[in-house]
Image (tube, rainbow, N blue to C red):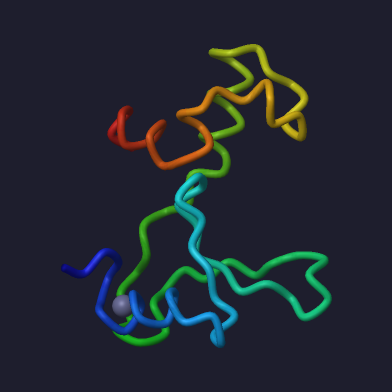
Length: 94
Ligand SMILES: [Zn+2]
């Protein structure tokens, strides 16, 4: 079963030699920069060319701030468990 847009994407995300990642928490596909200071998000699949689903970075911070009153996003203990996986956006059908 293909988890992402195509089987090549699935394979490459699982291949530790390929520096490309998917964050279920943010629904974000990205390539880390060489010094790991930042990452470059990708918006289209490099293999099948499809437009990838929109990342949920803004929604993530908005919901935590507005519904949970969380301001310190670096303190992982304050972040509800559902926000550490894709559970929060699946549940909200985003
Ligand atoms: Zn693809």
